[in-house]
Image 1 (spheres, helix red, strand yellow):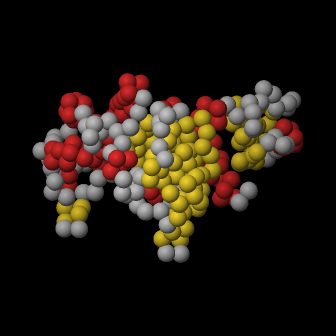
Image 2 (cartoon, rainbow, N blue to C red):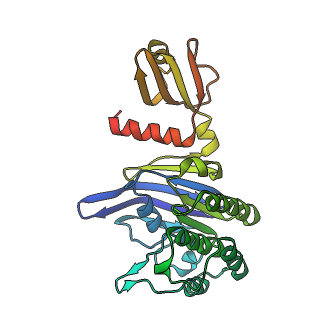
Image 3 (cartoon, one colour):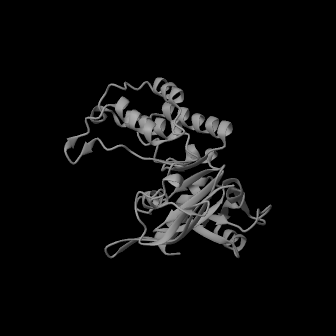
Length: 292
């Protein structure tokens, strides 16, 4: 089993430290979700893992080989992110068909028939210039490149940002089908957590340049609860657990709890219910803002 591994990664821009001693292992044959707030360091981390951005400190390896300036390692990785409609020379006048042709030469396992199928599915006019594409069409082109690359490790940075709900569901279905057929590794960074959560076998939560959690999604959520009831009863029930956020309205309190193991009963006088990945993430973020 191959591993894309980042060790002790630090990234600084001047006096600002964007990534702080990050350690991460991406195992092949899994679908990862990378979630975090704007500015948390998601894109910076992905660009370093794929050798598009040098780390200030630390190293990135694939199966033990350095990724930086290593064609063999990089040929197994596809990092698909939003295409710029503007270049330093003005509007990006490259046509979609030429953009895809360039991708075809870059990825050794490129599947031309699959690319054509995806172009039809997303109804892309390949004769259009990149500068003339809608945001949704731009997102679709990045998805086509990622999937048709057939790269062992395929990374998509906000792939559904410009897509409508129908196209987003098509994308999720395509990833599941491709994963089932090939066992490729996918890392998907997204703000649309609720929709994509069921895709993620493992979830990575990054905040302020640090990895807060990297866990099996199902196991993580099996330990997350929203405990509610009378204030005193809730405080008693959650004592000894990690409480990420609590909200009080009069004498009523609701707290988001992450236990070390699944909990069958928090005791009398309170109700407990499962927490979605999005709500757990929200509670963690609110907790950080409060400095709890």
